[in-house]
Image (tube, rainbow, N blue to C red; front, side, top):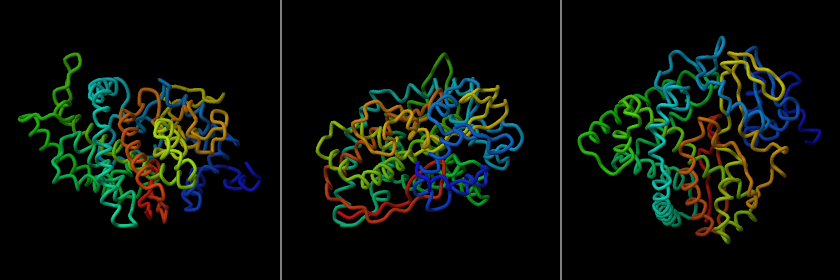
Length: 409
């Protein structure tokens, strides 16, 4: 780290000071200097009475994998950022926020639907969708990669998976944008954003209540019909659980895929050699997707509550305290990744944490990789001379992505 970068944070880091710095537009465009300073100054640091941040790869990995941490912020001591009593309980019932035994039971029922066979079957369809989207965009000369490719790709895949009728798919982009905020801590949300998200949840729930009823009476060959009948040890998903699983797929599946495509493309535009390399050598794609996940993760942080004292980096976190794990910081830890700020498609060993870890490791990780590979492959081979014109970051923190990525072809 150079001498100037050490002035990014105040001498004593507080919640307001840290997130105020990160949300500075200039910093949020590239927060990795702040993350580097966090790692070097104190990879495990208390920033409030009952709130800690961890930024090293080892500490973030350990807190994600620890069996003595909770994903439910309502279990935190005192005021828990993100646990707004006015916010719909359905958010707290999402699989990503549940602990054992509820999490264990639901994940066991859901995981069987994301079989390797199902994911592999999506590969040709994803490539076909991307080809069609790029063909239509080609005529514009200049277009928004997020709006014309990433969004419709992710919407179409998730809707086809769930069996959502084509005419209804326009709702998903609207609901997804409104719900992207729910993964941010409550301290980073406004009442208006919560109101909009709550309305989206209500509309989503009503829609899937009706769609589930239709699939119960007339099953089809889709994921929703499979989830309705899936059984483990005599147990099945109830109606509210089915709706929550579908909601999770929208928030954590669709949104993160869109962000991965946008973030990854912009990262490659900063290193045209890597972009050209991907177009010439498609066999690099698996490594490339992992490296693009690492270099600018579509999910920047996870929050856990210590339900028992937990040791991280030689420091004991008291029971009841919250821990924010910065995935983006962990993914550029020089103790784990050589030349961490460099995009390297030959990085065959890549233990990035972009899909989380432990029992909450992302269920849709394989699906996200398939969609991203289709998008990056189509762009790199179909538009080798593509140029980045402009890009606008979205205002969310936990989910990091772009509102728009304007390109010229």
